[in-house]
Length: 297
Image (tube, rainbow, N blue to C red; front, side, top):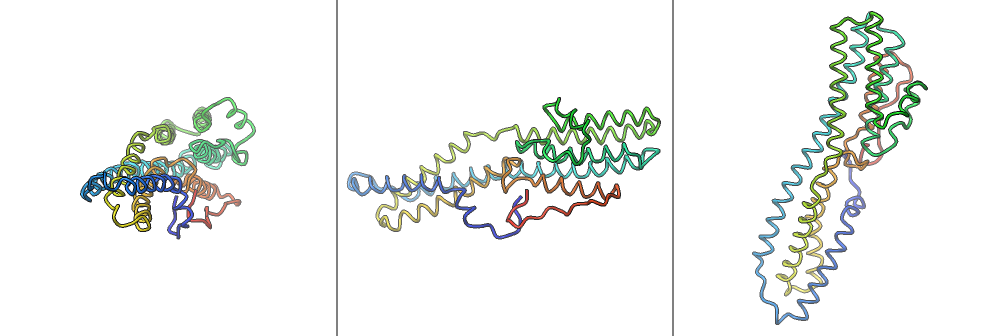
């Protein structure tokens, strides 16, 4: 997640450097053709590239809007995960007849592990990395049998809820409340996985890039009389604005790709860890995630 800090120019340029190379090649090619066949080419009124530029602006507005919706949905899902993770532990402590039992601590730590595991899984990383500090050896062994590690952790907590009910520590009302919280957590996981697996139409970006190159060509022909020393920088500057907006939308539409524009799932999981450990009166509470960079993962 980008922070309110100065974003390095290198980060901005790296997003469009290859596209600008293509624009430069196209511009030089068109400049060469217009110079060589200047007498044969018809006049290109500026209204044509202006019309194409307007069309690009409309397409970019739509893509930015849809991409932000996907990013904001991901952030809302993880906001719900924060709320339900806190609620789960508070319910365990208040709805059981033995609120300080070892099984409650085990389930609470398992919930912390679930948050980290889900975030790592969504980013294509190892979903069991660094989970040994929260899970027992038996839990880690159980996870080896499952492809979907976060779902397996929810199942383990559900089984422990059943044990608490059978031991008489939960009444029917308490069991229903805790089951509902687990269902909401499972629902949030499904929503995150849906966002991850649903691909924004690739053809949209391809067509948009093609229209930007068409805009560069028509504008280059329209500006053939101002000279290449002014024309090329102007084309690069204008196309860079369109390309940067398109790249920003492309990165926002995939909020779980381990990039600076991601939803900060690791930082959110750290917040959940802090909250849960404080609820359990633990002493080894970590500090909130901080970053010396311009983004937070």
